[in-house]
Length: 478
Figure 1 (cartoon, rainbow, N blue to C red):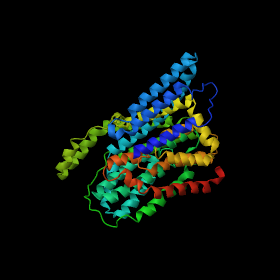
Figure 2: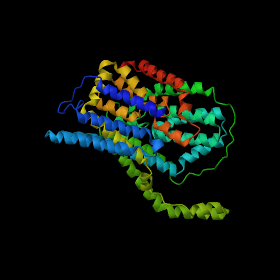
Figure 3: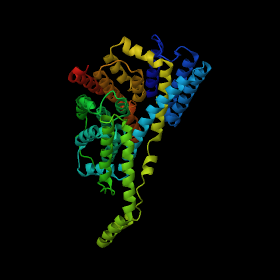
Figure 4: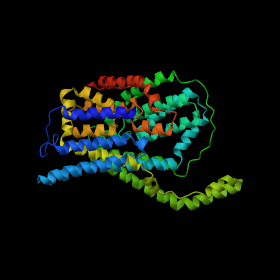
């Protein structure tokens, strides 16, 4: 069913490419009706179909789009070489590659910090605290939802959703109805929270790095994003059983330096924001500098480890804590590069493939066709709302990259609207966002596509409420 929905939406997008008049940017050839252009469309559709069959084929999603990106640009390059104008394709490819490189390095640093915090047991400690408090199901439903909403603007929606899902799975044990409902709630909250921060989702990061929305301007989406979460959550909460879960409390001790790494992460974010807002430099500069902070701190932890272990071992021997002594004997030094290696490389390479595929199709002229169809024949509001719904079926990354590549002439309020709809539209289906897809794997058998689909009408109410609130509160920006 989910593959059928994605396939139908992709087919509709392909139809859009051929149902409107063609035009090409200056300096480029219009290849939308050429054999090369049609072949590139076929290659992209085949690659995306293989991506949709990832669960059945057990083939990582990055592989087909990497090959497709290479084939598309090779075909483009060969055509231009045959027409004695190779320089244009080289410049276009380098432009797309630079855009990807900035985003990849930014995400790589963020993933490294998140992995470092996970290794220092920060997330385990949070989960343990919630279990210790003995919250009932309704409390847990709202707490995990609000935590997802407020953590995702910093830690990104995918990481936040996985963390909150782990809490629910630990506390609720085998209560399938509650786990399914809580996972839906977490996906909605994480996606909504990520919509009002450049760090909350890849799409918001793309908009911020493009300079279309400044860092502080994302905050005007806070109330619309909150409405997007609260409306469906309030309705779903009536269906949460009012009972007490039985879970075993596990005491978690933070590893040395955990709180200081949190501080360094916040300092890294502040550095990235300052570079972009005050110095007009790419935010990736601040993020890479922040990786240097973590490397220096890792050096400090390694150099001071022997002394720290000696003091802790002496104290453990003094009180006769043999378990503590055994644990101290297995401590390994902190290694920054091991955290880099644990980054989600499949996601980063998939992102590269998508960016280069869509960039190639845009260079052929297809994005101009889509822009003419959506933003020429429809109002910008209708187009942006529709693209948000489409992002529930097709990943929001190619949707947002396509819009950024089109560069339609829109007001500031409309750019904020597409940022909002692309971010929260994915909550309509479990396959519409990275958070939903990840939770279907983590809570396999509990959180399902059809279990989420049953609540889609309720989620759509939140989607509509967020749009209406944005149009009302930020009317002066349109």
